[in-house]
Image 1 (tube, rainbow, N blue to C red):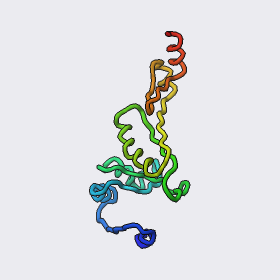
Image 2 (cartoon, helix red, strand yellow; image 1 turned 30 degrees about the horizontal axis):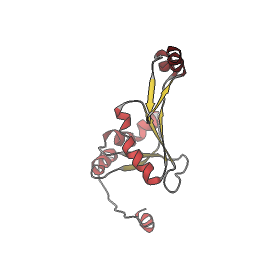
Image 3 (cartoon, helix red, strand yellow; image 1 turned 60 degrees about the horizontal axis):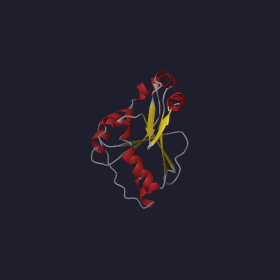
Length: 150
């Protein structure tokens, strides 16, 4: 693998780390800027039997983790053209923005910010409004209330 990557003019360093996979990745990854790894995307018994390595790394790493779902559509060659950043209005979700923005800038990609609200939550709280990228988006009921109030 290292030889094939080196043939693509990449600087490659190969290491063998002994220990449980998730813990070894977390410890080794602490010295790097990003951990990129594939995940099987298993759930239920498959995850229990084979171990949740990606999940452990995702929750235990001190650096950003890029997970690629194996076995799905092949990863396109080159930089991504569109990057989705799910937000929920919390500071925690917004922590993905700096790296996503940097990747988008370097790739010349479109950055799409999205917020998903459960319909039951949205209808129960008619005053709910979301500010995404400086654009205020209101649910139809709230927008109608605002129009009648003016």
